Amino acid sequence: MADPKSDLIPHDPEPRVGLPPGSVVFVGAERTHPVTFQVLGYGPGHVAETTETCVDEVLGSRDTTPVTWINVSGVHDASVIRSLGEHFHVHPLVQEDIAHTGQRPKLEAYDDLLYFVVNMVYVDDREDETLHAEQVSLLVGEQTLISFQEAPGDVFDPVRERIRTGRGHIRDRGPDYLAYALLDVIVDHYFVVLEAFGTRTEALEDVIVEEAPTDVEDDLHDLRRDLIFLRRMTWPMREVLSQLARLESPLWDEATRPYVRDTYDHVVQVLDLVEALRDTASGLHDLHMTAISTRMNEIMKVLTIIGTIFIPLTFIAGIYGMNFEHMPELGWPWAYPAVWGMMLVLAGGLLLYFRTRGWI
Image (cartoon, rainbow, N blue to C red; front, side, top):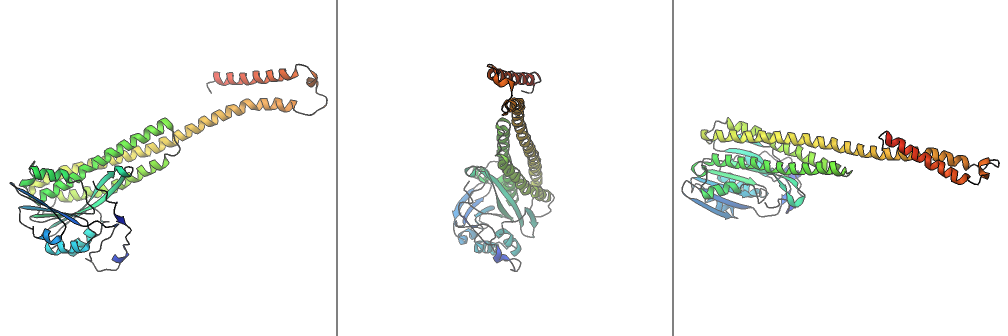
């Protein structure tokens, strides 16, 4: 997948403030790549695929095949959204939502189209397994499906391959089934992300158990933050699919409902796995604190034993370090080795006592 952040530049969302409803103004991290269009038209017996860079060429492909899928890579050019919206009679508020990339996943039904907002989530291995989320908007019409994504690169290649090869029912169905297929592959990719999180969690657990490092707190914080973010992305998807399974619309075939319910079950599984990983992350934090406490206790035990041994030795050294004139032991020829012997015997006796008690 292409890196969606490789061409980001800062963008100020303030120009949107105060504008009338339906104003198409891009809100998000501004991008510099050109908007591209992948047009895939298909029917039971044929497939036609082109890649365009001009919106006028795309508009000419409408209704030329039983189903036309127009995938738009880039929503930062408001003129493109307005041109497509006017041509396909898209409500101005929907056009505004397409350009505003901070939308919550949702489903809106109009007379001549269905509008979906979902989040495509993936992990970028080139950025230390950083979690990314990209808004995807779907417009489902009678013969056309238009998908808008923020940047080139997506998780839809399995769907494209099914269309090209004719596998499954996708070429025999309408745009509603294509919309289901795109939603399903987005949800299935959540499991890929969760697998990466599972590997990351196991690695952190091994580090904590074997090394008990003190600098793993940041990694645990990042893991818990990413899991909260992933839950926030997936939870509304359950609502969208639940609404879609009950949707009464001429644009949504009754035969597609069982497939939607299956995807809904997948979302529920994703949420269960996210909650399980969140519990595991919390357990890792507790394990980390316990490991640090255990390590500190071991250090304190060693220091206590050393201090306990040197207390009587310091007492003896203090006694014979006094500068009194009349100390009988100072005149004995064997006084110095006798004191050393007494110190060694006392230290050895304390070590033996600690050993028998199981303290060392």
